[in-house]
Length: 370
Image (cartoon, rainbow, N blue to C red):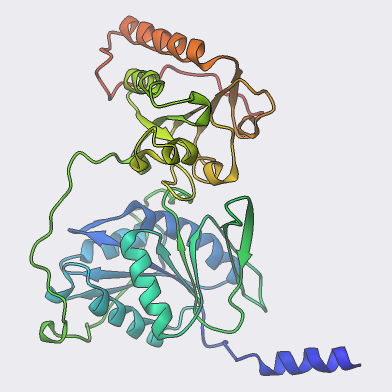
């Protein structure tokens, strides 16, 4: 009897969140171009909204970005909120967070999702502080409980990336999370799709904003793992920095880039910009080579969505083989040069130069067994 009374009291104390409905994706853009993670989140948000029988909404902020509102509809949004103003041209925390807070107050979404980028993390943290509500950072899995609970199940690696933890926000709305780029898949762009675009005004004038943008320096030549279609990654099994030259040669032959596990980066064998995993980049390439990588959760959470995974490891019991479509048990110092030689040979046969990084990968017959 006492337990039943306690449960009844807890349920009675729960706030009434019935006014909050829908899933909102905050679209991140720079210079009028949306980040891919925004469309990926719309794809995942569509699934969540369908389970909740609720609308999928998007928020586009900036100057001269009406075309992105239309794109958001093409990528799945039912309703897009558009806020354009000169003071919103470049991201600054205060004016952008004010726009988000105003929209959340008016539209009352039950779930708000951001990309786990530098901008998304900054903006989401500022909003969560002001509301206040909970915020789950760097999620790699999203789901919802069906009505009546309508809880967002935001999962991410925990305990030194050794296991997955699912985090709930039961007492507050909206439920918020940032999600890694490359984890979810965008819906196919449908230019015939129709949706509602709602314009609203910014609440801050330029003279009210303390931070001023004097200039923006674009970094060129930076490695972009998240957009790479082919990645050749190495781990602790390489034994040192020198073998990465073998991986670089294979990557060059395939028209790809070099990646690495956290162990290799922490050992100082290669720079952090090459790291794939929970504390590095989350990638979705067409082809991923995992060479000398054991397959710890910290790494696999960043590459498990690759179309084809090829693992090379001398330990036949290495966890990485559970994720691989093709596995090779053997000496990487013999296997990698042999594969590189064969790739170069086949590309030469098809009239392609090795330095032509746009060339396609030789066709592989894919097995469904992992």
